Image: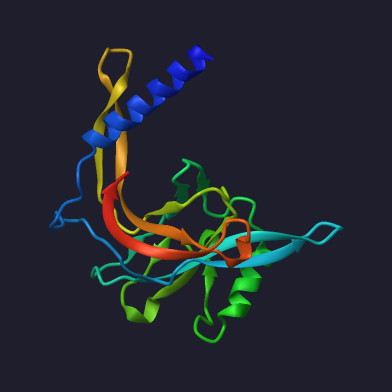
Length: 212
């Protein structure tokens, strides 16, 4: 148990060092750097019946609207993670079937008739408002004891930076490089009785850009 505890402490020390050393995104873009414009709706819950017993399974989703006003077509390789205050990390799309997407699309078809799932949104965002994309990001349900969470959305900018790993060394004894990407962090707290999961909702706490 002591060895396990010491291992956990080492992991958290590494995470803390990385966080402390992480640089901030640039205030002004350097030549060649770009960031997409994004709008989003608050995460919502949707339920789907699964299995022969038709047990209800909870999912959460958020719709984001991306517009490329950078002046050029840009590459788009998104990654979206949900992280709870209990340190559970869930990548978007994990254990999410096309049936869930179809339910979400049907729910929002009047406002978002061309809604796309994140995995099929393509690898390019073309320039201009005529090429605006509405994309749904979906996660399976998370730790019911969580009281707050962050959503990390990467791929909205091409800004990157390399920093030294606080512990790992290469064969030459030099610190291993960690490559960080400009990432949008959205913070939420959870409202509602945790025992009644279907009544839970998100309360928006703010956003910021981080290097992650």
